[in-house]
Image 1 (cartoon, rainbow, N blue to C red):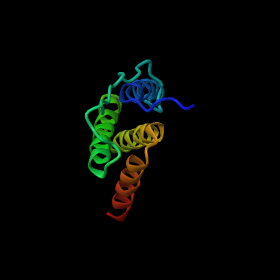
Image 2 (image 1 turned 30 degrees about the vertical axis):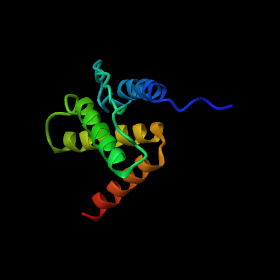
Image 3 (image 1 turned 120 degrees about the horizontal axis):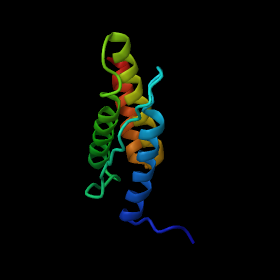
Length: 117
């Protein structure tokens, strides 16, 4: 018998993953003692089985990733590129952890659009 797919349980698992990701992935390439903040991404109000809900969750994940990466990577263009990479990596990890087909589809679609631009 599997684990019930209860929204509160999904939220708890996702929050734990986001906290770990924020701590692990927010360390910049240069030496520093600063880690990024833990960021909560709430999605209990969304139906992530729909394209609209998945798209909104993806926007929330990217906003949370930016809130972790922005304060760490400030400065010249090379630092901006590192910031952008940080956001992409945190977003990819969070999408992977949620692992819901509609969210993965929204993420892959947004990546294709970005590469085509």
